[in-house]
Length: 361
Picture (tube, helix red, strand yellow):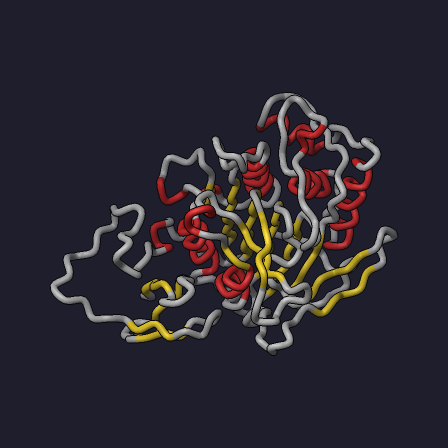
């Protein structure tokens, strides 16, 4: 059983092998030494948040394990943050979480018991989308994964950037996700997301990330970005860091759809709709699947981009199977989006032919 400890320098959660007395952080390279406890009381499993005097953090085993299957397991983490009652409030993110959960269960046959939902509406304190809980959910998602497993990480909330000083970002900035408590606990940086969910993936395991946030193009720090023009032609840009650090997987497959390029912002669908709202990227992704454009990664990306482009002239309205999906969940109305300039992005651990590779979760 691995114990989780925080890096003494950057506070990234690290998996300490049994019996180890120290561990080196893969992100900042600092060595954290584990002191032997003296007359320590038995650990409590009911303390939340963890005592600030300890570097030990809650185990991802708090979440129920998913039983293995001869066909592989399906596991998902869905995170929707509205930042309710703050100046950062967003309108559509919890609706995004509801719609993605519905899609995964009913379209892709994910067992409901294998989906961890992190929203402010959850009563379980371990499922509120704080920085620590999102970190633990990411660990849970990849923990014990085996060939044949399909993993999904969906995030809808604020995203941001911060200056990168290591020289491993093409544009000089790290991309970040903003947990509910980011103003006091800080953001989750792409280096940590990559180290937690991407690099451990063994051969035969698939991870799909669907990120509906600003500045999210390369938020998983995957090595290759599909640069596609308006006519659907594309090239793979090489985003491997000059330092030579490998940001790909351990043989598995990691692919991310994100709401916009690193320098862009993402919107929700409340621009024209007075009924309800979702994130524009989540809406367009679900719409691509529901309208039959989900055969390949290229068809999904081009469908999402076409839907976004339609909104620039105010031409997109509700309608089609996706509306029935969302209205079943929400209010019985249709959705509209207007005035968006974002361009959904596709990144991957390896280049591939986006128009021939079948999409599956």
